[in-house]
Image (cartoon, rainbow, N blue to C red; front, top):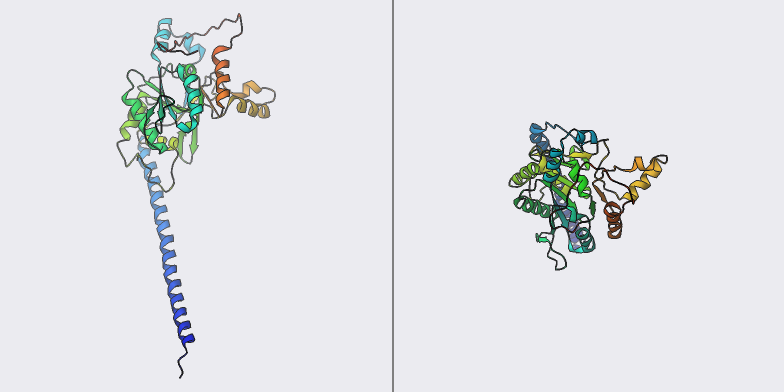
Length: 337
């Protein structure tokens, strides 16, 4: 029989193709099985987290309310004076050179009312003073900032973590924690929920007592519970990763509220909150908007922050006498408004 090269090559090509299909099938099966295995590990890790943290999940309070005026009137003048002088806030402000205009605005506006304000940056900048953490990863940078703040706390016992895009009214924060004991593990702000995890939203500001920060810094040393670089299939945001680490220490997210139950930490600007209230509460816009004792707002431009500063600290109706029971004096040497 005559040798036909075309037929020979066709047979070999068919065999090679079949072999490639077979190998490709094995490869795809391996990929699928590998993915399922990774997913199983992640699920087991989540189960382990909920099981381990469940041993300390005896939460005494989910809502932290500011004292009412009635509560304050029951305190003696000497006690009120003592409390107002003892409550001091260390502000941990996270910045980046690419948002220099927000950074400069925070320097010149609300941060002047902190008893201590330290800016932490991702890289050095000659324009403004900050602690250069030389760290690009958001979570690793926040960890380093919190560690630094703890090691340099001095006599300060309350810590406020904020982004440069947040506007804060520090005196209202002092009022919120006035009668709270910083030796108790407080972690509060705008409490949110993601699945089974309660966390405090970063963009609204995060408040930590000294005890909560101490426990957090301690768990930083345990890479199994609180890794510096996430090992999950998906990367958690800094605020959620913070909540996970704190949960291992028995510290849980709490919502900061006024005496009437209104939230004090806002992820929106005043304009947005009023606009929302006009739609939802057209007959009672102001009451439906936000608390008189609000601590934070977010989503404002630098110019709007300057206007906010004017409205909060400088604008006063002539002849009107304010009868506040407390006086929070500015930090010594401060040029605040």
